Length: 355
Image (cartoon, rainbow, N blue to C red; front, side, top):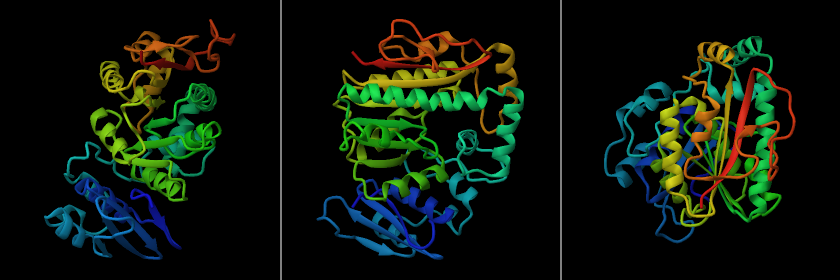
């Protein structure tokens, strides 16, 4: 049994229980914690990793019992009830990954992206934002699809190099083919850890992991906090940073300014073993269209990076041919990108290898 799984009965895990789960996992690093939800009730279960398989230390429908008996302190008052906004804003033990608030009245990065990909997990504000972007630049929908097609090619290439560990930063809502589906075509035992700081995304990813594949897991993690993400990923037991890993930063670094993105990328790269691969994609555009997009996009701050900026995110890596290129034209090993028609917006993509 994977201790990071979320199991559901006839119902889904309610938002309040999801926040309780994230907070408990942060407070109890030595325990595997899960929640079972059935109809309107849910039960929390914590198992010490030093005990035998299936030996549960505490099982209770009241999470305060786990806080008191295992964490050695009272349950934080801010977690009372199902007030998601208060719970997410409350100080939490050292996860390094505060979750973003769930608010269906405001657009959200993952949900708007899901809508553009043709998914189903979105609300009216997400759809409205996406349609505003499409109205500004109709190529937006094509860009997100090109990003997915590039990712499939890139992961096929990396898997063919014998890499068996994958960490997907800012994974977003599951789509098909998902990272684990792609790499498992090459090696069914390859480990995949998804990291995100959106509670809705995490709920979906934990439910995905709960389907019984012991090689998939998900952790709460903010892309901009590399050390915390690395610790959380390793804690799953699926990632060994002493061995080659494939790190995926697809469509996430444009949510950081260029200097921060460089620093964050460099921090991840510094912790990688030789032979590790890093996949990066970044949406960007000509100054005029980029300025309009950054003003319109209100789910989070977004930055229009230059090609030079994107190339700098690969510092410390040997970039494989054809280098950093338009995702439409990137083919592994080609000396130059494939021919493509220039347009105002594009997804720049590449793969770097840690020497």
